[in-house]
Each structure stands twice: as C-alpha cells, then as structure tokens.
Length: 294
Image (cartoon, rainbow, N blue to C red; front, side, top):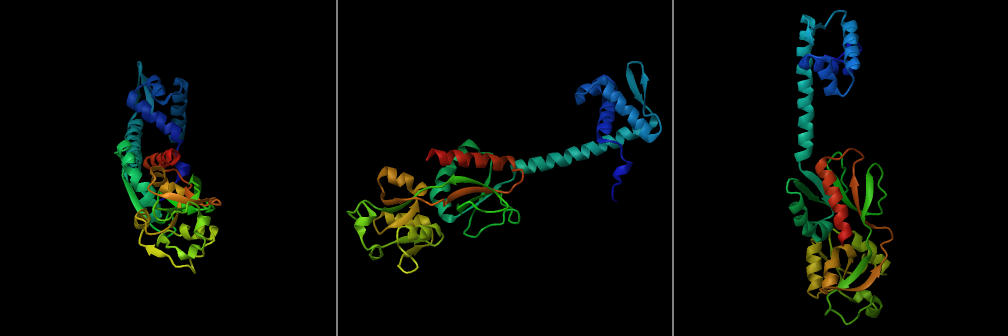
C-alpha cells in the first residue's frame, strides 16, 4: 500500500511524543531530544490538533496517556523499532562486508600483495576481496568499492586521486650487461625484453624509449612476477613503474639503465561518487599512506 504522506504529522512531533510516552514527562523527553520543555509541549499540541483529540493529560508531575495516546505510542514504538533495526542492519553490513578491490595483475603482484601483511596487522577486522583484472570494471555494476587503475586519471563519472604517478625505469640484473645507460646498449631491438601479458603500461613506455614492441620481439610472461624473476636472474630487460621495483633498486638486485617521465601516466585510486563503507574508507587511507612511504 502506498503511503499518503499528506496524512502524517511531522516526524519531529512523532519523535517528541514517542519520547514523552516512554518517559512520562516533558522535561525527560526534552533532555533526550536535546530540546526545550516548551518544544515538547508544542509538539504535543500540534499532534492533538492533527488528530482532533487529547493524547496526554497531566497527572501530578507526570503525563498520563489517553486511550488514543496509548494506541499511538504503541504504533510509534513498533515503527521506530523497525526503522532502528533496518538502519542498524545496513550499517553493520557496510561495516563488516568485504571491501572489494580491483587492480591490474601486475600492480597486485608487485606492489599491493607484498604490503598486505602490514594492512591486516593494522586492521585485522577488515576483509579484502581482491579482483585482479585487465578489464575496466564498472564500479557500480560489479560491486567494486575501490579500484586502482593505471592511466592518466581522466575517467568520467568516478572520483579519482593519484596514488603514484611514478617515473618508469628500464631495468636489468647487475650482471646482465656492463652498460649502465640505455644509450650504451645501442640497438635496443637486439636485446632480450620481457613483458607481462597483463601489463599494457610496459608497451606504452616502450615508445618513450624508442622501441616499438609491436615490431620488436619480446618474451611475454603470464604475469609480472615471472617477468621480474626472469630479469633478476639475468635473462633480459624490462620496463617497469619505478614504484613496483623500488625495493629491488634499493637493494641492488636490479639496476636502472634509464628513467623516464611517466607523462602523467600512473596509478590512481578510483571510487564511486557515493559514501564509502567504513572499511573502504580505511583501506583508501592506508593506500595513500603506503604509497607515500615508498
């Protein structure tokens, strides 16, 4: 049955009467609602005018409900209890449901997963559902809370903030070549290059160093972890976001032969322009902090 809102009194008046019925006095109801004694009395008068009959009468220091007032009090208690139950259920569901996060497989393998232990140690109550994918998810349709996308950040209809607009690097194992600059390698097409099938950004940056990988052969691996393993073991070269290989460069396990400007390309945090669940907000804050730690 469709509700006829025109027949209902104001919600504020109904709340005031519910408090009055439970406490039995204007003063106690006023304290609960953080309003004045006079405001509660005014709400009562408006309700009595609306129904055309008395709802409560003074009995000493207390307010005694009339038969109609008692009937209204029961209906309001049931109604407000049902509303409270529904709101609590939704809030609890938003708090405890898994936070669904999508990102490129290369980002998941090289950047996110090595840091997740830190997140779970800080927030053991938040469950993450990771969805590595190369497809561009529709956040609403696919139920995605947080996406980590690679690109220039120009995506309409969503909220976008940079996570790491990193420079890119051409990397190799220290023993792979004596060269320490890309220019020293001369004909780049003669070297062994390794890429991940799931990392389109590596081909974007290839054009920036003068290598057209549509023409130059490169060994494709199923994921970026295998690419980095091949390069660490001295099998060839690769192009990576510096953010993904910073630990290897710092330890000396890999060396950088070239570092280039990402030209606005990088990883971004993408969310729907709606209120995030508490867990999603916590995860987004953690992402920002982790990206800043380098």
